[in-house]
Image (cartoon, rainbow, N blue to C red; front, side, top):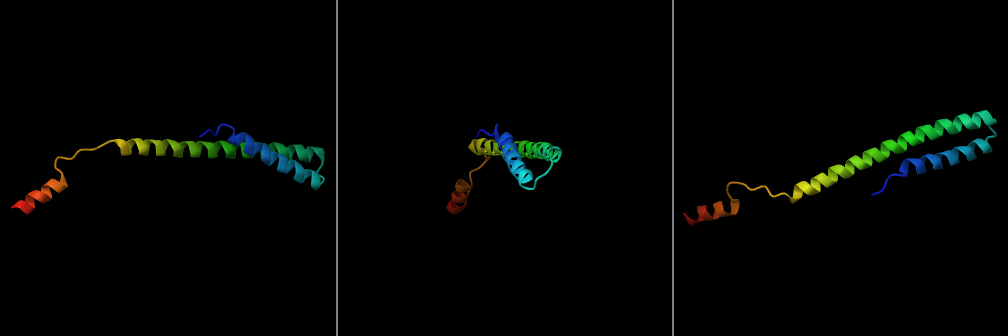
Length: 88
């Protein structure tokens, strides 16, 4: 799955919400810019962390699927052993 733009989209949505909030609350221009900068940095970091976690889960799932495809042979077959005991 393509998650390349996830941090950017999350950051921009948070920035838009922050801009609207600061406009409604009538913050000064300096307060608006500081709030916007802090929110953009925080949400970019959160988005990058979320993308990394989801990519890690995908890699683990792919590895598990590949491991399930491998056949591990044992020395004896339990069904054959049970038949041999019944014959005696």
